[in-house]
Structures are given as structure tokens and as C-alpha cells.
Length: 233
Image (cartoon, rainbow, N blue to C red; front, side):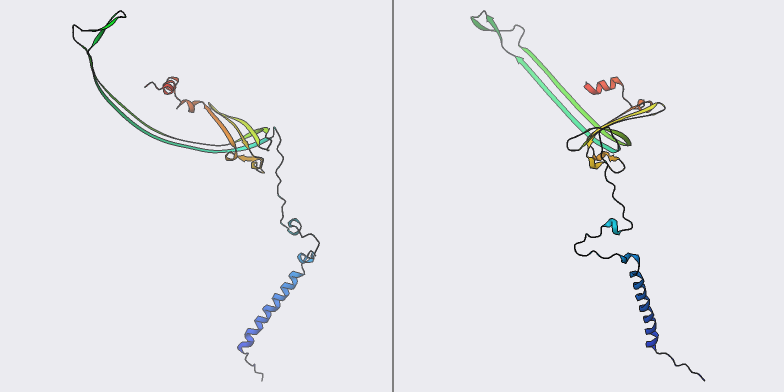
């Protein structure tokens, strides 16, 4: 009759631990035998391994292209303008005057100056002036402009800065928009996609003109513009 001897708690713990150690050593030996570890480490005097020769995911950087005169550069315009102005002026003026001319003079050639008494009495002037002026103004304007415009390199400065100039016209039915842009930017501000942002352009001059039905709805007449220019009232 066979009888099984019960195992101790120490043997139940040691056997799984030994199996884990054997698997770990086997995995390390298999990893060191792969092709990654076939390369010998550079010895003294040899150049080190560069990133392009030791990485599988290395991508060479995109070098900036050389920009010449008359090349095309796209400008991404994203401008936001906001203005708020409030004004309140009050002015009040009151004046009273009473003037009396008591003595008149009479010239007798170049010899003498004599008093000249007025038969109907002294000349008097009396008046009162009241003036009130009040002005109140409240101006709030917001405008945003976002578009892409292709510009031409008009000139290249001695320090490498690019002088850009571009024009764009959009016409939809009876409405038309004309945009003109000039400015100066650095050569390194032009991205790999040949796009430069408007905030990186110095001496930016942006002119937008609108014509058509939408513009006629809120534009001022010539008489109103003339009155606003000279301000007679």
C-alpha cells in the first residue's frame, strides 16, 4: 500500500520561486542574443554611434529652404481689434457786464486835448451772457479679420529680412472685398509649410476695403462725413 508524504510549506514556496528565476535568466539570455546586441561598443578613439545610425525611428530634420526674390510666401492673418471709449463733458459759463463811458475827449488840432461833455449823458452798455455746453460720447467697436493671403518677396534686406507684398480680391454676387498687405519678416519665421503668421511681421500694413450691398447698409453719406470732418456744431 502506497502512502503519500505531505509536503511542507517551505517546499511549496521554493519550487515556484525557482521556476520564476529560471524563466528570468532564459529571457535575459534570449534578449542578449538578439541582433540589437550584435554591435560592439565603440572603443577608445572611435567616433560614437550617432542617432541616425542607432535608432530605427530616426527621421532627419527638415531644413529650411532658401527663399529668393519673387518667391511666394503665404501669410496667415489673424487680427482682432477692440476699442471702447467713453466721454462726458459739461461746461457752463455765466457773465454779466456793465460798462460806462464817463469822459469824452476833443482834439483841437495838435495843440490841446479838452474834455467833451455829452449833452444826452454818458454812454453806457449793460448785458448778460449765459452759455451751457454739454457733450456725451460712447464708442465701442470690435473687428476681427482671419484669412490666408499669398504674398511675393519684393526685396531681401542685407540682414536677410524679407519684404513681403500681397493683394487679394474676393467677389461674391454684389459684394467684393479687397485686401492689401505689406510688411517685413525674418527668414526663420517662415515655417516648413511656407507659412508665416501675421504677428511675426514687422511694419505690418493691412488695408481692407469692402464694396457692395452690405457696405451700403451702414456707410455714411458725403454730407454726414463733411459735417463730422469740420464739426461746425
